[in-house]
Image (cartoon, rainbow over all chains, first blue to last red; front, side):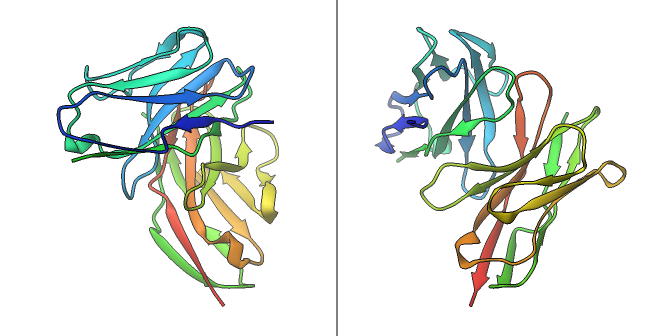
Length: 113
Length: 113
């Protein structure tokens, strides 16, 4: 079956602009996660959704970052007033509730010039 | 707070040689432990996981890992490395429930002929 997909695969933007990154989880997976992976680092947790609601957004670095999952499937990570420090690969993962295993998408590489 | 240490940033092994990648974790309760592999341009793939039970865990691609509570370690091993194993390997620890996962900084494996 289809895995987790993320679009776009690459996004280049200018400092101060707004960007949206999309994640399509595996069908039927109720849990969805966003991570950020900076160069030379491991993925860093940003936010976790259970269904439509954000169950834990403690990893969002500041209020410029926001994520939604209005219908409990597709999720969008939104970044306002982008900064050069936001440049990273943004990973999405999904899982069935309680299974523990997260399936990761290929990521979106965001470059802020 | 949970944390993971991967002391080796980069490891080079000859094809056919054995491999051990080190991982130490910090977590107050019984941890959920994972090893992931990330190849260039690919999403993270789960190699194996430990939740409870037998402390020697078998995974995909011939990998295994051993949970040692006394040493707070979860080292990854493979008896004979193949060139296709060249990738970056991440150890991770999760808390219970929805698996808020904390990743280490990764170990990049190079395989030489």
